Image 1 (tube, rainbow over the protein chains, first blue to last red):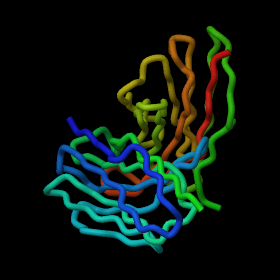
Image 2 (image 1 turned 90 degrees about the horizontal axis):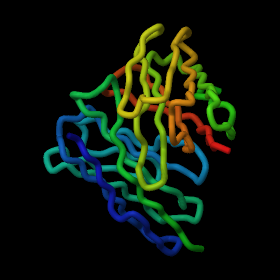
Image 3 (image 1 turned 90 degrees about the vertical axis):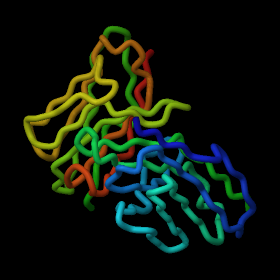
Image 4 (image 1 turned 45 degrees about the vertical axis):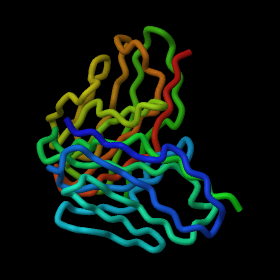
Length: 114
Length: 113
């Protein structure tokens, strides 16, 4: 059974710091891994999608890596800003799954202090 | 703007009442999903549909029902059989199963009063 774990559960950093969020999964048979951002009381915003054949994806100050063999992904945020404060979720799309179902981690709640 | 629209944003349900959550997408996606989000439990799949007039149960389908009469619409009904319906409900869509990106709506918060 695929399980996704995110560490740490919460993180507080001063503005300007570079930071790394971690995501691990137990079964490497995945189509892709997706990182999302969720603001309080809001829906999920897709940040980055990494296909299983890719090693990393970049968008602005965000860089996500994928090591499928070790079951790990990281989301690197450069020069963090207070506006980056949110919960970050990773999710995998298992190859043997129900029609595109995503398996989610519990999320990392990030707070960037001015 | 292309996207997924969920309504209402907030919904209150009395005991024994059925309520319906709306989800509409204009992304021309074939697949649509309903997830439930509870504090400390992450997102769990309720129902999904890969094509019009077809849908399958997810991990926690008991007490819920759906329909998929149009490609753009995937409403979720929370029935009186759902004993603990208070949660945040999220609708998502993707172009198809597997290697495609999923997009989410802004959610509906359902509270039992």
